[in-house]
Amino acid sequence: MTLESHTGPSSLSLREIWNQTYDVNVSGTHVMTHVFAPLLLESSDPRLIFLTSGLAQLETMSRTYFAPPSQSPAPAGWPKPARFFPNAYRSSKTALNMMMLTWHWTLKADGVKVWSISPGLLATGLGGDVELLRRLGAGHPSAGGRLLRDVIEGRRDADVGKVVNKDGTQVW
Image (cartoon, rainbow, N blue to C red):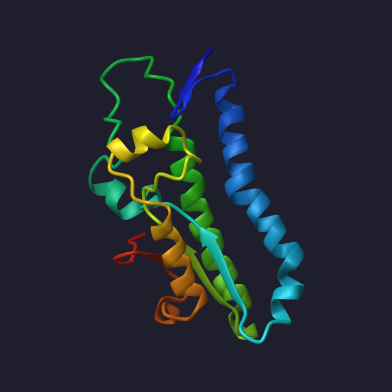
C-alpha cells in the first residue's frame, strides 16, 4: 500500500509512519530530556522547551475539523484516502504536549520552567516545498525564532507549563 504524506507518496506502512513520527516527536524527545536532565538542573535559570504545533489542539479539533489549509475532511466511504498528514503528526504533538506537562510537574520543585512552543505555520523547508508553504500563508521562519527568544529571555515566564504561541497561549 502506498500512503500519501504531506510531501508525496511514501513506501512506509501506516504503522511505520506512525511509529517514526512518535519516535521523533515523543519517544526520542523524552529520552533525550531524561538523559540531559542532570545538566539542566545545574543551571542557575533552567528552562526546558518543546516544539509543538497548532495542529495539536484537542479543544479546537473537538469542535470542528482543523487541518492545514491544503486539506479537507475525508469524503464518505471506505477506504479513506491513505494520507497520514496531519494525523500522525498532530497526534504525536498532542502527546508531546502531555509529555511537556509531565516534565513541568516533575521538575517544578527543582525550579525548572517548562513550555511547549507552537511557532505556527512557517516556511522553513522542513515540511516540504517552501513556495507552497508561502502560498498557503506560512510566515517567515524568523517569527519562530523570535518566539523562542522571548521564552528563553524570560518574557513568557507567566506562561510556564503552557503551550505558547505568537498570540499568547494555545488551547489544549
